[in-house]
Image (cartoon, rainbow, N blue to C red; front, side, top):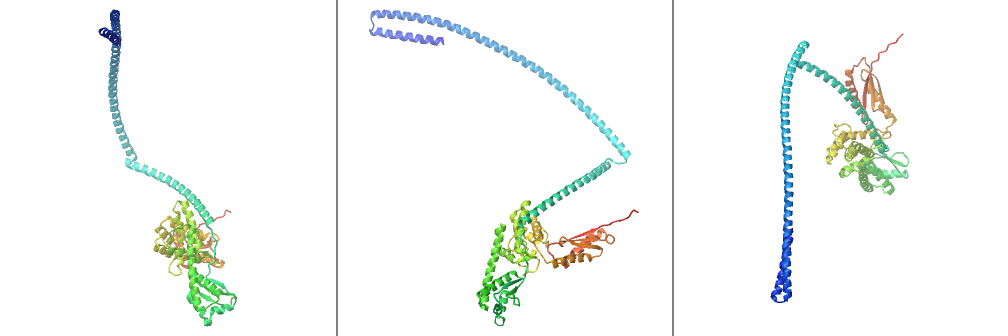
Length: 510
């Protein structure tokens, strides 16, 4: 730094001297000024020399100081390196000692392993000797003893598992029965409908008895034309101000009723007019059938059904079974199936569809031979319904085996709808005769002591004489009674046959 200052100072002095010299050479300065300038130059040179000497002295001092600092730092670094070397030497000595200890421990462990191995061989030898001695004393081999122990343990474990399984099964059955009762009760309460009367005749009021002659016509031509075109028997008797239509086909009877009411209201009763009115009434009834089917689909929320199936659903409006309207029953079964499916996590729309179509065969069972369940399944198959729905229709009266949960839901919903109080009705005489017939069939078998029809004729309980029948024959007897009931009686749903055999030993203390 001092060398730089000295150089700058010398440059400034040189520049000043050059300027002065230049002025002298140009003759611009006076002689006095020249001498003064020379003096100044001499003084400046002296000062510069003195400054150079001072600066050189300071520089030497600074260099000496820096050299001392470097020597000191070098000495400190040398000492630090020496200390580090000593530490490394100590660490190396320690590592050597540790390695020596590890080697010694390894040798000790090897020796111990050898000792343990030798002891294990001794123990194994002694164990073999003891086992041989035990086999000699027990007169059983090791495998035979192991088998006996395993058999005993397995037997005890099976017993415990059986008890646990039985307990779990009973608990599951109780919970399932309670849950099923709750579901069925809720479904029935939410879906109950009124019953209707099942009739085969319709009574049409007329304004006066004179109208009967006009209905009959000259030589009976009007009544013959009406019966031929409508397919219904028109009964004109002594009943005042009324005539009767008789037919087991409810749609034809409804068509004839509408036609006759319109003819009476119109007053023009002759063969041509009769034909015209009947044709119009057929179209109107067909429209009613289609509307009833569409309303049923709308009420149950079912979509995309074939028009012919919709029409058959509507025809159920004019069908009844034990006083229960077939269409109302089908709608109720659809709702119950939907509730069951929602509780069980199944597809609600599929369950409702199967429930609505389960009695579709009743719309045609008066035209086609066979059970209505099989007829309905064939119809559903013809119109490309799914296999789940076809099986549910075919199996709801056990004509086929149920293959899906939907089939079981439909059967349960059908039974719930049919058996709930107020759903169906029959005459008291027919009811009593059915109960008496049940008891009579059961009492006709040998070995039967008493028979009682209970639960509104849905179960017959048979008491068996223990002296004449053993337990091995009871299954065969129950089967024979059930088959005879099927052969000789007609009834809705199913009848349960329960056999009871009890042995009583009585003595008296005197």
